[in-house]
Image 1 (tube, rainbow, N blue to C red):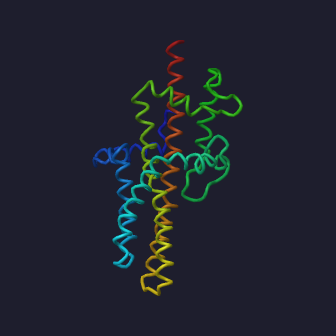
Image 2 (image 1 turned 135 degrees about the vertical axis):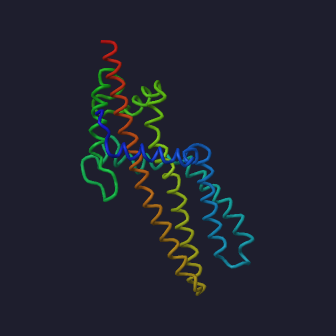
Length: 241
């Protein structure tokens, strides 16, 4: 378990690049929230200017407010994607733990293996359900909070995962709005209708593709959490022995 895995090396290199480029602060905390809101507002304003001039005075302020709301909902409600989309695939009984996911999505076999190791290690403590493993992630994170350096290391992929997750909802909303504009222009027999249809499809494609870094980074985060927690417990056991 001490050997560096290829994905672990990749995320370490990504982390090093973000720090070198001065972008690490931009993908977490308040800067991440502001970037998400800004992106949502820009997309909404692009939709507003696609309407005739006589409607823009009303639509631009309205869509500006909608953009802010979409950005806030996306960041504050990000756990929805974890509960409804990620956990059914990579959770304790996730369907992608034992079967191959679609191309480009991470396999769940490694996650399942390291999670099971952590469950076995924590069973004697009574902190996890011995049958289902419920509570293993929470307990592993509790252990790592006692070691800030280790916690910071495992949090890096999670930061990237949340950053990618933040943009999924705004792009889905943008796809719907561009589709509405497409229908309006189609009815009005406007030549820009195909462009609006293309914009809707592009936004939809981006929203779907964002699930790849979201899933990949979160899976890597969880694997690192279980590895680090087990190694920490082993060190404690050796020190006390």
